[in-house]
Image (cartoon, rainbow, N blue to C red; front, side, top):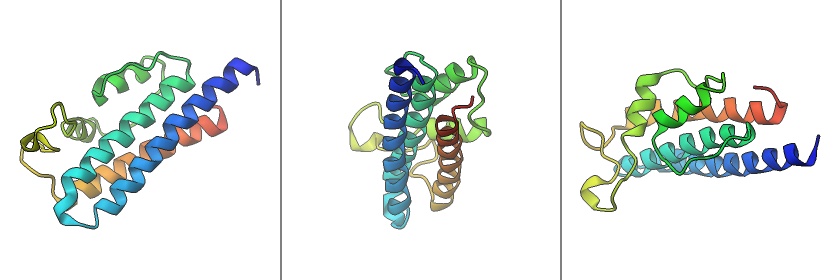
Length: 141
C-alpha cells in the first residue's frame, strides 16, 4: 500500500473510531427513556461520521456539513450506496442541533423521539457502521 493510501485509510479509521464511540453512547443512553433525545443526537453523529469515513477513505474532501442526506448523496456519486432506508436517514437528519437552545435539543417534528424510534435509528446506524467498517478493512468499495 502506498503511503498516501495508508494515510487516507488512517484518517478514515479515525472517523470510524469516533462513529463507534457515538454508537456505543447511543446504546447506553437508550436504556433511559428520559434520554432518547440525547441518544438520537449520538446516533446522528455516528451516521455522519460513518459517512465521512467513507468520503475520507475514497480521498474525497470531507465537507463541514451535518446534513446526512447531502453527505449520503456525495457518497452515492462515488458509486457507493451506504444505506437503505431513505426515510430513516431523513428522520435521523432532523435531530441535528442547529442551535444550543433546549427547545431545539434533538426534537423530531413529533417531539422527543420514542424508545421505539431510537431502536429503529440504532439498527440503521449499526448497519451503516458495519458497512463502512467492512469497506475500510477489506479495501473494497
